[in-house]
Image 1 (tube, rainbow, N blue to C red):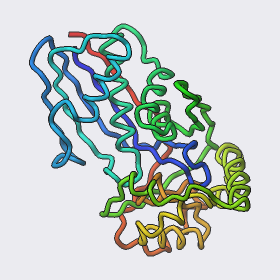
Image 2: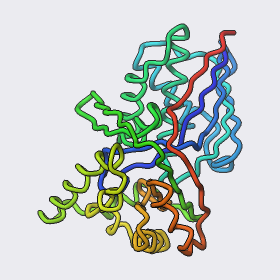
Image 3: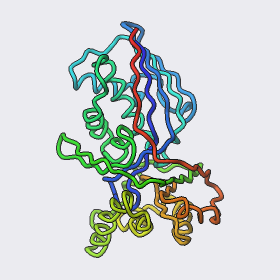
Image 4: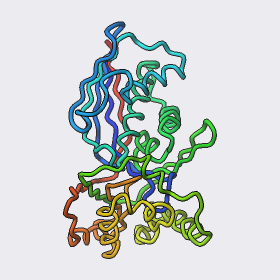
Length: 297
């Protein structure tokens, strides 16, 4: 059996939607898995992470496959040969780990249920539980924009319908910020004023994405996480401020340090006036969810 999967990069939070709102973009990792009765684990990686990711069963995609097969009580094959071409930057806040986990869950589904269509509900559930946050993982599975949360062992996903004509920008720096470090600097409590402000912005963000793009600048305002993380990524923080000063609905992408913006072409146009030295600009569109193909051997 051979399986292929194409999985998108994602951004989480979009400012006010902390830990619950995610969006997929048209930027993909592509993986091929050959399954055999024997042969052990073989891994070939090109592109992002080629010099750093493990080449054994601890590789995130392989580990996820084995975990999911265990959940479904399906024996693991004796041979797994993975070829991964990665284009999503690692440790930049663009969902590289979520993409790997979502891909692993999908590949496991193809092994376990080769004659069935991919169960995206179960795939998104397992990927979200493994990743820990459904905003990236569920967006990678479903594509588009989603609102999602974990409730015990269940994962609730509301798929949004983004307004026509929305575009995206990602500004990616050369430096990395591990998610664990970005989590560590967040406070355990915030003021009532900040909590109310965040609730207003997050509630309006769904409306802004679906029907009122003119509200995106205000709706992406954040009081819970971005300014606390500024010390970990000063260049990203200053770029974010410069973009928002000229009206671009810019956010820190996930835990950073990439800077992300979504809006109409007119809203994003002023970004061209902003000095983004040290960042690589990517013009993107809202993307589709992962695609799995099973080729029977």
